[in-house]
Image (cartoon, rainbow, N blue to C red; front, side, top):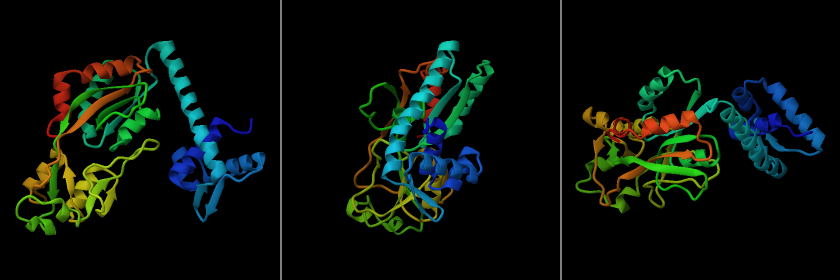
Length: 302
């Protein structure tokens, strides 16, 4: 067989990281081995898969078609391994938990510590997602459980959810930002003239989402919630922040809270999981996340 799962993993990594060298780092391989493997695949198939421009490598139409179908095979193979493990022991070899960036990941640590203390051997992998990326992580199979998924659940089968709580975000800006001199609630026509600091949606296949962004408004995209707060403190733009980030900065005088003429409603946050893959580790976390004190610990000052 000319196309193997290992080669598909390589194609996926090159596509996601943009170059052979970056993909090699992610896969813990030397770049020359990666280049040789892809060159041999292209030779075996008698076609080119990439458009190479300097260090950049971009899939051409043939390569894109191969990878898109190949990703279905990678997910199927991964699910097969995980299913066999669950059948054999009842416990997952690994549980992948995606945490929406609106929730500080360290709030999960006491719960994970209790999981380890109970003697469970399932490996835990934590990842951060933003906006629609939390739902996308479930839909594409890269997460088994999502904590804090924002907004409405997409129309996908095999996903279940329940409400975790609501996040009432604060509109906060640097005290030296031009809008800080505005008296009274800020109307949209004024807000639109100022750059918004936004977190990039981490979706890979589902449509990307935005929250609170006005048509025509300039944006500065940052990688995570703490970077967003730092950018707003630096006066690079405006935006909403959760209480756990905004309150200390407002108290310290590095941010000021401003009112908008159109107040944003509290944002619902959910716990969601893949209902076809409920092993013992996932059941353990779902039971923990149903407890009132655990919910309070996760959603405090969102």
